[in-house]
Image (cartoon, rainbow, N blue to C red; front, top):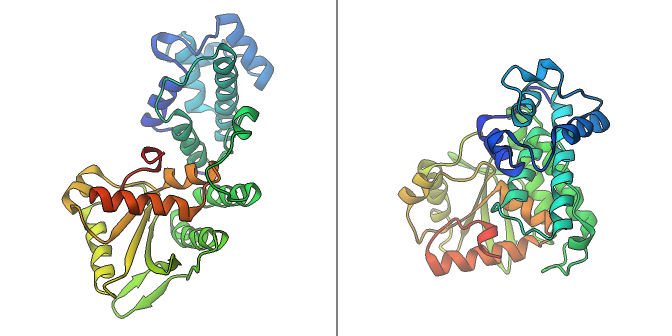
Length: 292
C-alpha cells in the first residue's frame, strides 16, 4: 500500500458520491454519524483531532480520509458506499450521479482495495454474455494485484494480465515480441483477424504521440492488421483530437476493463462493439459505458 493516498480529484468524487457538499455526509445526523464510526471502526469521529479543518461532518470525514492509514480509508469508503446503496435502494431512489459506481470502483482498485459487492437484485439479472463468473472474479483480482505494484514491474504484469484475459476468452494471445527497432506488447486473434497490442499503465493518459507511434507500427505490418491500444489511464481528449479519425486503432481504458469484468461481458463482445462504433464514427476510442 506504500504511496497510496487520496488525490484532490478523489476527494471531489467522494464529495459528490457521499453528498458532502454543505458540510453534510449522506443522510447522517450528528449522532448517527458518531455511532456509525464508533460501531464500524471504533473511531470517535467527534474527537477534536478530526476537527482541524472544521467541525462539520464532511470536514471531519475529509480529514479522516486524508490522514488515516490507507487500509482504514479503504474500509471506511466501502462501509460508506454500502450504507449509501442500502439507503438508496430502500427509498427506491435512482442513481443521480453518472458512472458513480464505475468511478468509485476505479478509485478502490487504485488504492488497492476490493470492489463493492454486487447486490443480489442486480446479480440476478440476465447478462448480455457468458463469461464465467468465477473467471471474471479471478481476472478482477489479478487486475487489482497489478494496480498495487511499483511502476517498473507493473507494466510487464499488465501485459501478462492482458494475455490471461485473451486466453480466458478463447483468443489466441501471444506475449510481447520484438522486431528490428521496435517492440509490440503482444497480439491475439479474433474472428480470423490479427490484432497487435499496445499496453500502457502510466499515471498520465496516452497522448497523440503515443497513438501515432503505435498506429505507425500497425500500418507498417500487413494491410489487414488492426491495433488495440489499452491505456489504463485512458486517453487525453487533446490527443484523440490531434490523432484524428479513420485509423487502424481501437482503444480501451482501465475503466472499460473493470466494467467488462464486473458485468461478466466477454472480451470479444466488448471489442466487437468498439470496432463497430469505430467503423461507424471513425473515432478510435468510445467508452464501453457509452456503448451499452
